[in-house]
Length: 100
Image 1 (cartoon, one colour):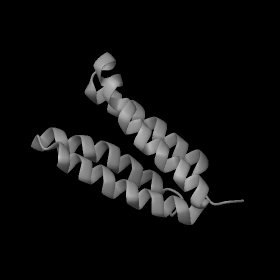
Image 2: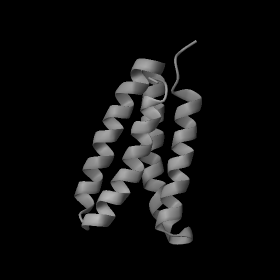
Image 3: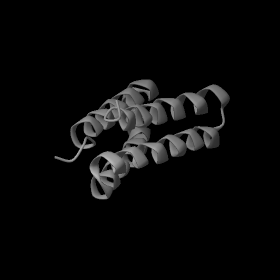
Image 4: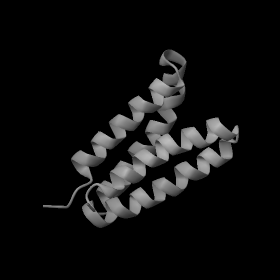
């Protein structure tokens, strides 16, 4: 289960941050959800995969959030969030596991 935990945190942060901001109209609340889940994901990635990969995966998480905004202009907000969340989850599953 610990191998999936950072992926769950990252997914919850991206989807939850969007949902919190959208439902409340408070972008700062969405950012807080995104940041808290990102910190939890980083800690889990670091434990599982080491500091280097955790840093790269966290950068991927933050970059995905940034990319979602221009992507939303092309395909809509929810499809953009789903797309970047799937890409981030895939990266987490591929590179966030235990070091061999």
